[in-house]
Image 1 (cartoon, rainbow, N blue to C red):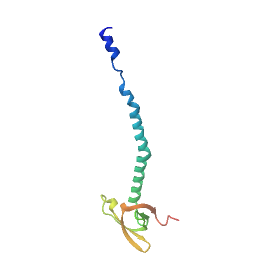
Image 2: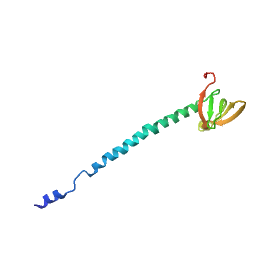
Image 3: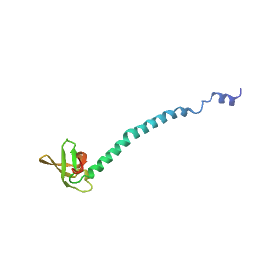
Image 4: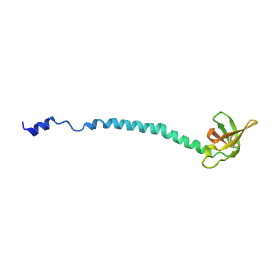
Length: 115
C-alpha cells in the first residue's frame, strides 16, 4: 500500500456534528411548546388585566386582592407614570376604603349593566 491510501483508510469519519442536530431540534421544540402553551397566554392575560384596571371608572364594581367587593366612588390619579399606583375610593357596604389600582383583582362593570 502506498502512503496516501493508508491515510485515507484511517481517516476519521466526517459528520460527527450530525448526531447533535436532532438533540438541538428537540430542545428548540420543547422551548416552542413552553412558549406557546405557557408564556404567551400568560402575557396576553396580564395585558388584558392591566387594560381592564386602567379602564376603571366611577360606578364600576371591583374585587380587591384582599377579597373586598365594592363600588368605585372616586378616583385620584397621581399621573401617567404612576397609573397602577392611583388611589381609588370604594364603597363596600357602609364603609369607604381607599385602595390602589395595583391591588385590584378583577373588575365587574357598572351596577346598571349587571342583572
